[in-house]
Length: 125
Image (cartoon, rainbow, N blue to C red; front, top):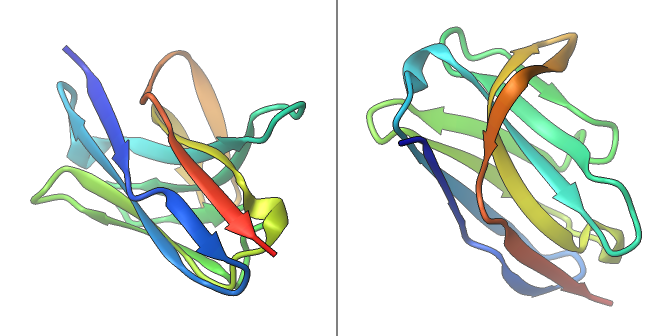
C-alpha cells in the first residue's frame, strides 16, 4: 500500500521558516519523482517544488524560488521542503504527491498518482 504522510506544518510569523516532511512507503522511493503541492482556500492546487530521487534534479515554481529548498533522504524514504522567508500568501494546505516526472526544466503528473493527507501552513502578518 502506497502511503505519503506529511508533517511539519503549523503557524509561523511572516519572515519565519518551516520544514515540511513527507514520509513515503509502498513504492520504489529511490526511483521516483516526488512533488510538493499546495492549495489555498478558493484557489487551485499548484506545484511548489519537486525532486527526482534518482538523480537529485529539482524544480521550483516561481513562488518558491530563492526561498524554498527541496531535498530527499533516500535512506529514510523522506522528502523535505525547507521554507524560508515565509509570506502570508504562502498559507495553504501542503501536500506531497508521487510518482511524478521531475527534472530541472519542469514536471509532469502521471495518469495515476498518490497523495498525502496534507499539512496546514498558516503565516501571520
